[in-house]
Image (cartoon, rainbow, N blue to C red; front, side, top):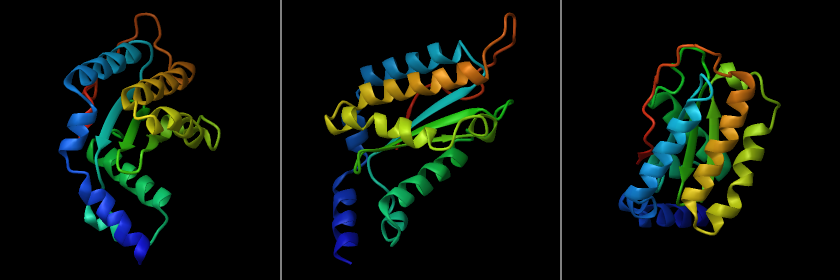
Length: 173
């Protein structure tokens, strides 16, 4: 019970303004450019969602925080229509600031082609940047790592049509 109260307090302390403070307009522009540049080399789609804190409905869960954050990332994957791409190779990079946790959710087209544990390993690799408070660096690294996987499994062929199916700008929630 005490853990739930401290979790609730930590998340309510983080208002929506925190995401806008941590990810400046300039950082948003650089992240947008990084996604745009990355998508020019493969047929996948990358979305970034940065959330300051979880909604109360998630905070009242008795599940471990890792499961709660994963469940929220999966929910945002659906709400942002990342699953709705031509080759089923959309990827959501989800950052929860209150927990300094990153989750990567990939659609079945890519997820079925990468070894088990890949997403968790990549997310954990960004932890150093997040713990240091360099969220832009961590997100840029995540875009790079996801791009390497998309290039390996869904390279853009010469003359292949590559429509931009999802917005490139990160969403701050």
